Amino acid sequence: MNFDIPASTERLRLCIADFVERELLPLEDDRSSYDDHGNIVLQLLDRLRAKARAAGLWCLQLRAANGGGGLGKTDLAVCYEEMNRSIFGPVVFNSAAPDDGNMMVLEALGTPEQRQRWLTPIVEGKVRSSFAMTEPHPGGGSDPSMITTKAERLGDDYVVSGRKWFITGAQEASHFILIARTSDDPRHGLSAFLFHKDQPGWRILRRIEIMGPEEHGGHCELEFDGLRIPAADLLGGEGRGLEVTQVRLGPARLTHCMRWLGLAKRCIEIARAYAGERHGFGQRLADRESIQLMLGDIALRIEVGRLLVMKAAWELDRGGFARKEVSMAKIEVANTLHAAADVGIQINGARGYSKDTVLEWIYRYARQARLVDGADEVHKMVLSRMLDKESAGFWRWNVEASAVGGMRHGEGS
Image 1 (cartoon, rainbow, N blue to C red):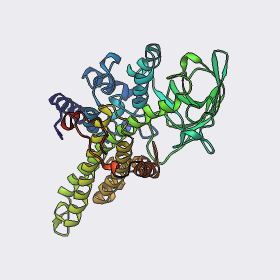
Image 2 (image 1 turned 90 degrees about the vertical axis):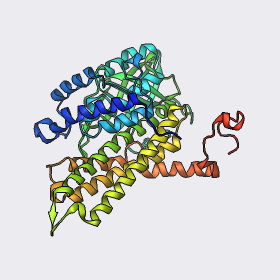
Image 3 (image 1 turned 120 degrees about the vertical axis):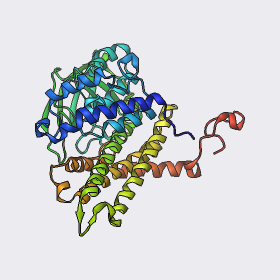
Image 4 (image 1 turned 45 degrees about the vertical axis):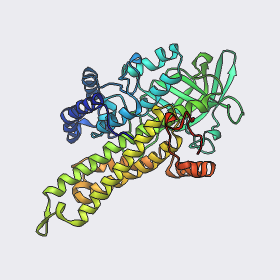
């Protein structure tokens, strides 16, 4: 097992770190940098995105042919973690959800014509995108089989009716990926569609107010009442909606984790800096055993999360689905981020609870990590089912074929 990263990846990481330090961190202390929903103001974002693109730090997750940096998932893990040392980082580098996952799935499953029409404008930063899957009860959430939004074929079009909610970025998005039901087939009953915000037959009912800071465009409830989508705008073909969700959500969950590790490290960075200078009762906070135990525990948990993320990234890079590995990483990193923000605030005391640092921003943001892209309990259920199915093979090692006389992957488990 080799944990070395390529020298080229390290050079890229250092460039990102320098950009974040110089261009982004100073902006976090300026209240004029924030919009009304706690994100970076769009005019400032546009200027920073131009700088990131000029520096060659743009869309690293996509192939070079599609305007990206061509990095694999293990390299992305290194870079995304560094980007999210700043709360503004991911969106500046065009690596923030939901655009990040939408670009990946359009690259993977879109036709050349679809990539040109729907992907390229997102890559170029001209439009934002959204992924419309989750529905209010009794519709589908973590269980896509419960989706009730319908897309009925009418000639060369599909006519959509139904509702979606908590759709991230919808208010600022121009390009949408919509998951809707095209039949009652339990495996092939869902399809994925592409549509533009200006197409009639749908509307935003409301922007749902949430506890934490919001992505640009918020989290919205949508209503579809006669939206017509040409058959040419099916993504992957009719009946392949479940595959689209699998291709998109697995890597998207993992890139969330990559970014969250950067935020968790930032919490500890702020806590350590304060503990090193703050004195009380004749002693620095950093010299108190109770503080050392808190910091040591979070440092351990962050490293556990990094290893889980890297294993999942490695499995994706080698062509696997990494369902088990992604679920493990999602549970561990989401909870670690929440704990890191809590420890950071506790060590900083009233200062941490105030807006003098970004700790309170991260704390409010972190609570959603245990819900988005599948709640902790859903992923634990997935792992339990895989344990039942695989038994002792759940913990099998991947053996090099050459080392066992050509044994295929998974044989002998």
